[in-house]
Length: 95
Image 1: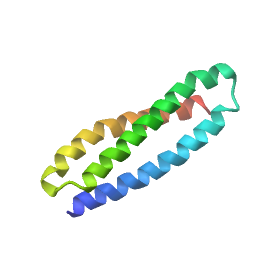
Image 2: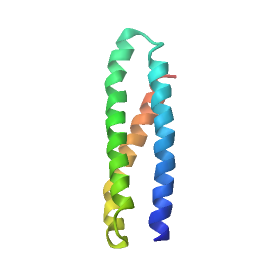
Image 3: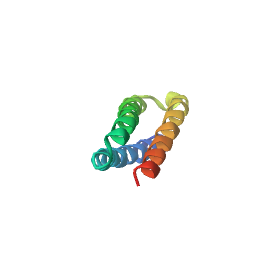
Image 4: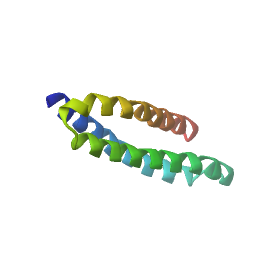
């Protein structure tokens, strides 16, 4: 139970950070050229969609039993890594 609770707590914290980063990236992208805005607006929307998907997956983990926690966690980790990579790419581009 402790491992699942700790995992949920860490991921909720990460989701809150990503919410703030999405807001910041949207604001920062608006100060760039229209070409850049159009190009990266798609990526920002994609990250937002994936972040919502992760939030739903985390809710599923919250309501799961210990017996299914490891399987659910494995399923979410790939998407977490994808979102993390996406944020890194946007931060580099929008510097």
